[in-house]
Image 1 (cartoon, rainbow, N blue to C red):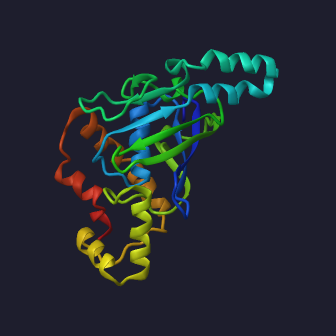
Image 2 (cartoon, helix red, strand yellow):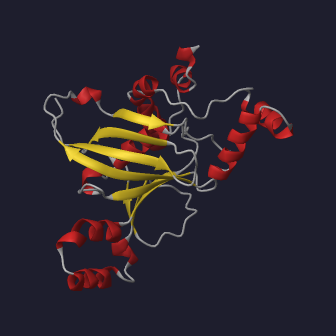
Length: 249
């Protein structure tokens, strides 16, 4: 049975239409790094770039307490956070020698920090950032916190619903993904030919989402990503076959 509270999240790719989103559940005691690997798996990110979570601590706090306090007290809360970026913002990431950001808030180690210590109330949010060059952003919302004594912990993480395929690595972010989707929908022209040569395919379905396949991958792929990010281990031949979905051929 699930011995810890369960967190249900809604995650959506920012600045892209049609929406690409996932609704999923995890145990609240997993690390933020593991949550990152789960998000990466669901959105077809291939552990090729750095990632982090940005948590708007001040906004989350006001969201949770705002409806229960007076405007006067709420104003004092705003004053407390004003100009105090170390209090207002939090970044959770894996230690790295490469730092391309100018983040001014507090930082925590994603491999050492539990999800339950970052988000504690329903409707709190955070942003998952991946590939700081292409600038992929996934908004993650904690929809529900609940317990289910009948649910086996082995069933988590699990995705409940979703739409859209995910990202394409190194395509230039949401704008590049839009161009790629248009080219494959048109299926002709020089840009389409370039994409076909680059990706090695002549057809690409960016609007589909396989629920059963994703739940299968969620039980396996995050462990491969953990080995790559936290232990610098190259994927095995078997792992590569899984990542490339050779089991579907």
